[in-house]
Amino acid sequence: MDNTTVELLVGCLAATLTLAFGALVVVRNLSRRCKTLELEMQRTEARLTSSMALLQRERSDLAVMFEYMDDGVLVLDARDRVELANPAAGRLLRRSRLQGRQLTSAIRDPDLLEMVRAARGGSPVRHPVELRAPNGPRAWIQVVATSLPTDHRLLVLLQDVTELRRAETVRRDFVANVSHELKTPVASLKALVETLEAGALQDPECGPDFLRRMHVEVDGLAQLVMELLELARIEAGRLDLDLRTCRMDQLVCDSIERIRPYAARVGLNVEVASLQPELYVRADARQIGQVLSNLLSNAVKFTPPGGSIQLGARRDEMFVEVWVSDSGVGIASHELIRVFERFYKSDPSRTGTGTGLGLAICKHVVHAHGGSITAESDGPGRGSTFRFTLPAAAAIESEPETVNLLSA
Image (cartoon, rainbow, N blue to C red):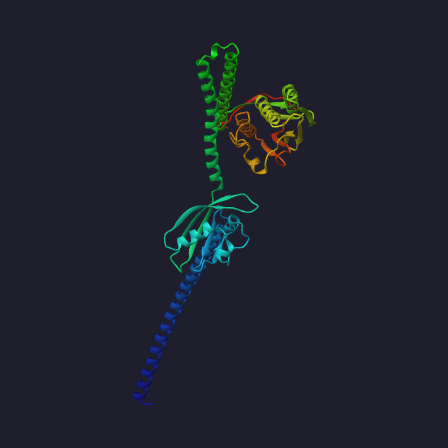
């Protein structure tokens, strides 16, 4: 083999080695880049997994909020078909199934349908709507309807404002009742004074009678002012309770003995229906005695002659329950929820005696003791029963405790 051939072979071998080394470098670089790319893909996958999990959590949170929120939500498509509806919407509209139905077939209220049509104009619509059910109570719903920017869809929000409306009604009734309770005796006093000025004061028969009537009207006004001040003090949390361990059975018996003479004069029979002995409660005896007195006075006032009034008390687990039952005029079912309101009277003409504050005071005093009070009746002419509960106490007498509701 000559030198030329050897040189040629050596050159080829060197070129091959160079190519192989270059290929090895390329493969090594590619391997490194592949590993880098693999790590980057793993990081990207981890970020995507984390983002998907976060989106899933947010979606779940939104679904839970949508499911359990108190306000109703409806989403309508361009043809007013319900695409989405949460349970609150069905509850407020008193419909078991809304999703997938046409709004006109799911909701029969013309005011609500008119609001939806108005909102299609582009401007949000907000208005309260009164919903009436054939066999249920009236409800007030604040409706807000606004168009969504996509696909001509409509968002309808429903908020129950029944309690707010009821509070406004109570406020208006309170103002009207206070005006009435003050106007009547003031007008009567004015008439009596003018009559006396006209010469009746010198009449030996009319003069004293008119003065007696004026005393009655003034006493009624004084009683009204006192009860208003007491109720305002209680509602403001400024009721001081002198809490002691006392026997509820004795308080019941004392209340019966105080009311029995007056009840007998008007032809009523007052008796104990059921009274467990040694019923101990932690209470302000004077305040609870006033509650019993108010309930008994109400029973006497609204029971016709020949009727009966029954009292009872018993231990019920951690509470002592007391009830006053009568055979009087009864209470309509729709009025039971309002009998503890200030000035509320079931007689719309308000010709009955009393200020209409007694039951409101009873409610606040019982609640201040940590108890509850309710009214029951089967309807007009079938009597009524008032029950209240107080936390039971041990029989051991302890030091008196003064509780101020403002600081409690």
